[in-house]
Image 1 (cartoon, rainbow, N blue to C red):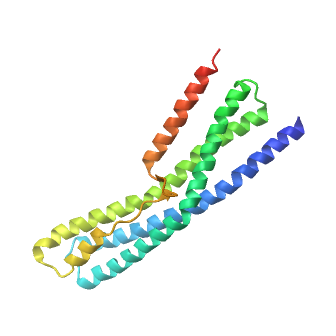
Image 2: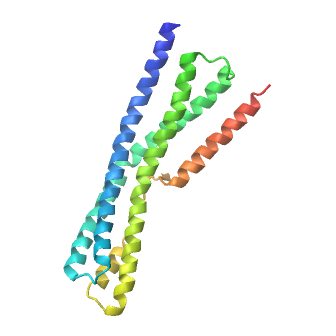
Image 3: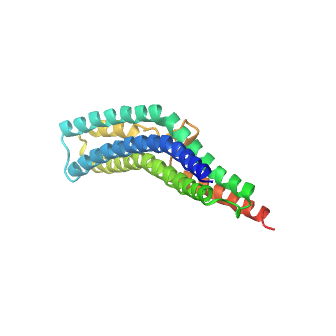
Length: 210
């Protein structure tokens, strides 16, 4: 029994570490990228109260273009990683349901029961963390676009030379972070995914109820 429980724990650790490290890397990159976009928005906020000079807007526009390239590269490099992370965690969630069916919910050993509960909690935390970090990029881009629109509206009556630069910046469409282009990593994915899991879970419980 001890050997069996030990093998279960070792299996759980081996299944936990790779997706955890991948999620940590992806989440960190997403979070730092969102921070960079947020700092650019702060620079825009600092000059929004005054009529900005052409050089200030040109410098911000150049940084904005660099960020656009960066976000494209991040999406390209981590799209497949995101897909594999989500797939592994959805697999863990479904494993919990299948184990409940297999063992009828009341025949689980302590080690296996602990592993199933840990996998369930771990999958939820991991998915929410990755999706929230990824959605930070889109949120910061939205705030930059809003600030640019307000600045453009304010300067439209003054016929400033930098109006075209701001217009060009507003026309730039940043990509959203995705899981291999299949689903977008935004907060609505959390609600829809775990809503489905909850629905299937309740269905399994009712089917197995004596």
